[in-house]
Length: 582
Image (cartoon, rainbow, N blue to C red; front, side):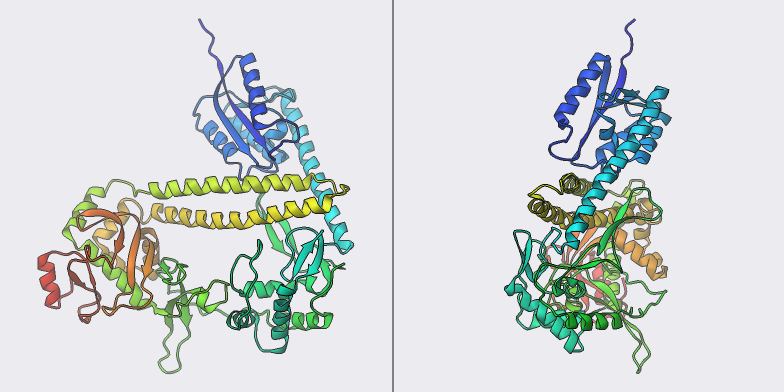
């Protein structure tokens, strides 16, 4: 009887494009396959993370997929083969936790080059020791690198990365860029000698012909309040070099998650570069910054929810509209709520001309009435009833999420490779300054890409979570639509907002209200809905082929011009003409 072959997975990882061990991904795979063949093991799965540091398992998607497959018993494997233990991980806690999880499901680890087999007592002991050594080695490299950077700061030298606005880099030295320095001087002058705050200074620059020079670390065309704030808080403009203004720290309550934290105190050294701002002006600016550092008290109504916040899109810049609250007026004591575009209120660097505050009650009712008109179509009810018992389709969003995660892996891979190269750079290298400058520039570029992708991923995940959430997903959302008027009108504003987020992806608006009283240009749903006898994901309210008949928009006493076109049957149309509520 033929002996059953032992099944195994192969896992490979590199931190940089050229692994320091001299073994690329292909070389590792070749070594592991030969070992498996020699030991008569059947390779039933291969997992590979390219360009990811071994400091933790966060971001190593292939590694996590392998652990999930082991937990699910997908292939019934007995071993995971890695080239060396350092390829499995460099964080001792992660290595041991991952190994324990694998062993809970009957899977052991073999480190081919190290000669370690975790199924043996001596093997597990060796893994504990070597993983701790690997972590200490990584921390030593990081400590040495940071010590070298701090020493450069003490010497007054620029420590790598992009030159701050107002300066240019030449052979690692900061030199004043006169085409940018004028803006720095204006910022300090306006802030010190006028009543303008950071937002006021930004508005002044944008409205008085000052042009922001675009470069790799300043890609937003206009001057934002954050740009002004950063200029006022950076001592580099007084000829100083600050070290450790931001530090990467571990998140409390987590094992390996890190985040960047602004430091309230940090050392400042005399720099070798020329100052743009005098010490006196710097002190005056800091005194005003401290005086203005209070937090404005927010007007908050716990019973009010900005139902369409984030769903409505600005017709000018395309960004989301958010809720705004106007304090109760002295005449009628009434608090008013609006939707507005932040780009027109707060200087963000993005130009937007949509300066209209849309009254929330009007817009909320308009959207609710459009949905109400949709669900009153008998064909809608029939189609919805057929859907009951089936899950809400999120396939398109899942595909979008998968594509974004692939982009994120690539960006994280690039960042990790650069991080590893910086950590291993020799501070005694005569070309250290030029190398660290180039690596830091490329490293900083990745943060913008990663942040943008992460925001998009969070938006898609939020939409998927909203659709799948227990209260209004699957059958529940369809049941709610069948009884929309009764259920929605009796719900709290928070519940209404929850429904809208689950049902609608975005609402596009006209730049101004049309003569018929309608703001809405197009509604995009999170999943296909039956409209006019067919399933659609978009409801373009400017499309005359869809807008065949007229349905009153509003209550029983709504004016005839406050209407939106939707397909309804002849009997309903007659009722509309008679002024009845549908």
